[in-house]
Image (cartoon, rainbow, N blue to C red):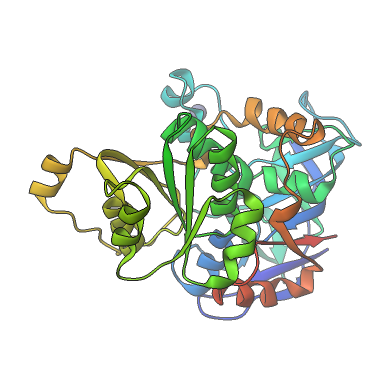
Length: 358
Ligand SMILES: [Zn+2]
Ligand SMILES: [Zn+2]
């Protein structure tokens, strides 16, 4: 099969021929039908994250089950499924204490190898998925069946951007009706945060990005205000929030500078939620006095702090019932070979989600 592979940090991604393994007990083979281009994929190409190489990119995807191994009970051949890059084991301390998004058997940003080979050598797969390929082989707990009426392109988004953004609002920040929310970084996740914040009843959703070009997308997602980021951001936010700062800031970039901006954009006692996945050496500086006297809360939201097995099917139903509109999130439907160009658009801050259709 063909897949999009990065051979080393700093080298361009290229389409190559890969050899798939036979599947084992408890495994599922999925024909990928749609795979979104997520910022974390770009981070694995541009050196922000340091995964092992060679690496098949892609982790936000949906497809059709084409083969199941022995003892597989979750899915059958022909099922439409969303791929889950943080599957829960249901046995570890975190799973047993209601925090499956922190499952200790999942590997966070690390890549795994799953038997796929390139020129005879093992190749790693991004977040255990490696979805920019014609097929993936995953453990059965990494597939979540969804109704076949849901388009593969929209289903793919549920596997990362939409779950992450919606969960940050509902499960981590727990935005309440009437509250004000600043959203920094308007990619697929940030725009999902905007939509979820409005759906949660936020009175004001102030969308922030580095470029004016995101204004239309922000408004389509439900933003009440749009601000181009600058050194005066916290002043701009205060001017729009009775000089207090916002109740919430949700950071969807994953950089120390934007986490600091989110901190300064919230009121005393406000909540800062970090959704972006940043680099290991990018240090956030906050003064000890500021932490105490501002009484703000700083939390991370990993994969929407969600139980994926429950929340991805629920989001699928919301889309089919017309309660959750995702159409504006997809700005580019592309082929696998066009993913590197989508990384370039993302680097320039253009568009929302690009989705590769296979
Ligand atoms: Zn992602
Ligand atoms: Zn677990």
